[in-house]
Length: 579
Image (cartoon, rainbow, N blue to C red; front, side, top):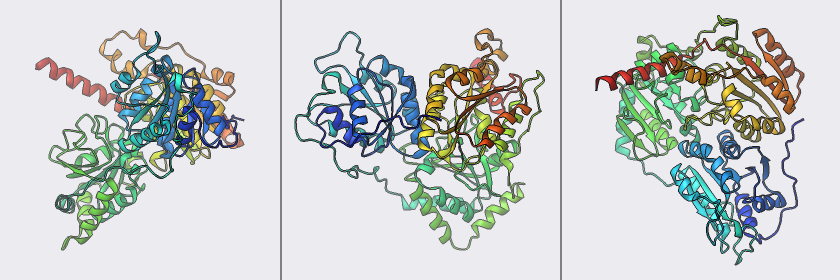
């Protein structure tokens, strides 16, 4: 049985009397969990959190895991993320997931120790400069009003949607506060800045959508965060539009006759063809990165691309028009404007146009994928048939957590989820691997009632192996699927095929089932589809804890999205050669 209670609860303290206690008292008004690894610089802060008893402390085994777990907890719950490490090497160990949180716009407060107020010691580094370099803000607490520093950190993280480093100088961590400053009221933080909508621009956009023959609505995680899902579905029905999402927006739209699934490199062939047939594309809360746009190939050259976002500039040069505003407010306004458009049957027009193009009913188009073979030519598992089987076997009430690597497309394209908070890919914004295990910890804390399904590669799993222990200790019910191809598969398929030396890309075969059992999990080597019966039996038993499925996958089956990456690199090299 996993250890779900990392904190020894104590009666809530009364008035905060130290810098650390005042900070803890403020943060507990805004968060329920702290993901932590203790060191000299944050010992007194964690002591205050435990003694107050209002926030649960979830301990991990590497400082990078504190931030990655907090990030995943936010993505799975929408709650403010709180992490804590010590100063110096503890802080620098956490920089990769801190950069990820900045690029993914995750509201997160990282509480760290810092150099004393008297000045740097030989082992101190300029933590504020480092934070700036990776896109995070730093706020340094003082003894006069540490609660205010914590309040400003929370406010900045929520309003600016990014990570904030809240630094506690080492000599102040246990210092008494100098005045009567204590935590403020729970509801005293300002909302996000209001962006006025341009009525004339919205009317123009509505007209374009109504007049479109094949309108497409493409939504990302930003639309979900803005609670725009219902309005988007209404707009799609009113226009007769087809719908698609980014990978992080999976589950925003109903899985009906209009839905095309994930756009970009993870799209099925039929869905990709339909997306390319759209004449007007309304993008809501999606960044339109190179993968969402299939390296510029996703949309037709003459398609009109409209982007809705709170940012002050479009996120991709392919955008023809940026509509600034809150996603829900903009989409609700468009629903009303479309309904008021005289003399036009918008729904019939859109559906008719899509039918004429061969995409009238696209039910299940995103699931029309090659099911693969029982085994690849080398006798190892074909990942396509493996994930087809996992879709059937895994519980419906699940949260899918994926690490990065060649395998990253298999889970989103084969495993269904109910909403965007049930598909987490921490690391994709910064293109890093190795954050899978701590992401599962954060997801497990956010969704203890669900089965947490972590999909990781052997390379990423080895990088973060210390926090397999954290997963097994903290996740109530989980399955770890190790896509074990004995290689860094992404490098093999991008560089070995171009003549780069393969030896550094290969990994000696690791028995992750044995490692999992060593940490206390149930586990099995999955060398054939028949071996999945061991996982099925464990799930059917109703047991709690974690099952590690060490899936011995072939290197020979290349994901379609990876082929697109290679093709894009080849095109770029050809352009450079002729420039």
